[in-house]
Image (tube, rainbow, N blue to C red; front, side, top):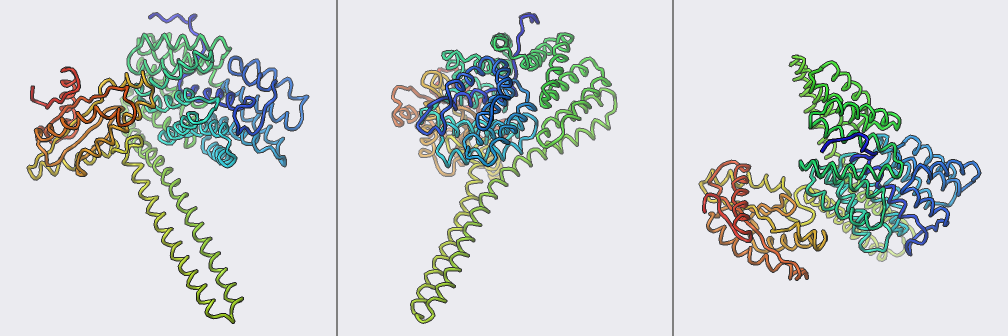
Length: 634
């Protein structure tokens, strides 16, 4: 498809999606009379203004700024909140932060905790956009705590969305997914304006961040249907953009570009001029792949200009890296190094560690292009060190959170112990003449102390077990994670070859699982996966390795079992699978499984055996599905 620049309108990529999707969230969360637990009712005028931001944030911003000088007190703080949200929707984070601070300064010494919570979330959003997510995390935690303590489900849903986006900035994708899934469940069980479809869009962003477009697309589709019916142009534009990017990642360029252009058209309707930079940046990547280098450079120059105006360091770095890649394609090492040096000046702070890794990778390529191989090699070593540091930091953050929870509980136990000791001393002084009663009290107190110490010990073990479970167990099915599955399989395979013993491996794929999600919804798909996993846990031995390695794909390993015996076990299991829908009260769903089986004697390499099992699985699907095929056998 020929790209005509006059066709293009303004739209943003992934980073704009998570900056702008939450703008919708606070809009739907704070309209008048939204639920029984609403803390405050907004005036009709305020509701109209909040709704208008969805389609024309620039118009609302101009009106709000003009009204501010005539306002005082709480009403003025509320309008600063409106202005902060409008600036944020336009990706102008400096101005958004300033407005949030001004609103908070008006509330000192007042009794408006609900408004303080909203303004703190607005401030957190701005800090996150400015590359200061750790500062934002503290504010988000406070808002979450207030919402839970005051049973404000609307505010809680909004805070969960902000918390999830903050986790994404910090590359904490597991935590982000947990936040969004909690929000999804909250929207399912309460009558909230923030719907499950809204959280579907957020969940899709996590999968897009993880570079798993095949998992992101179904969630984007669910959000697209809802926003189309509701005629919410801003959210629809963001969702179409996410779909377009996902299709491009799957090498479906025609579908992807059509979605991006439609998304850009919608953005232009709401005068989202700042979004032009994101649109140009994404289109330029497609043009580079097509060899249209000069056209791509033009878009990138304009994109960088807009990002500099918005003081958006994340996207400035992205554009500079894209320009450096073009220079490398044209073998212009000096020009590429200039762009990379500019990007490095922006990439300061812990939040930019992933960007510095990309910068060093491209710098190494630039040095190699200029025949400076020693510098390229040294830089690659630095890059690998930074990659290990990034992984360690992510793991350390998880450990710190677990340790903080443990230390808090430990401190509570110590405080309780001290309190009991004080009571004992007071009782001793008051009952000196009643020695027998005093003795009874001491015995009782010692028993309580022992119970507290036992409780402390059990809590410590519980935290340790929970951490191990999080690392090794799939959150949805309770089967092993892909990493743990491959780790255990490699160990068992080595033992089998060392002792000349049998071992068999199988890849299982639920037939037509995408149709189940599309027809009955993703909740039904999750129920099917859990039912399938529960059946597997009951059907096989404790010594068998049962893991989930993909969306609806599983990897089962049977130590001390030849391929024919494993075939018999799997044949019996596949018949039981057909009854899973009935077991979970989903009789309308038809379920079967296709299996590719391989003997461990075919190879000593787990990856190679998985490929063989995958070939057998492909043969099973070619044979009509709902069957088992053994590698090497017809």
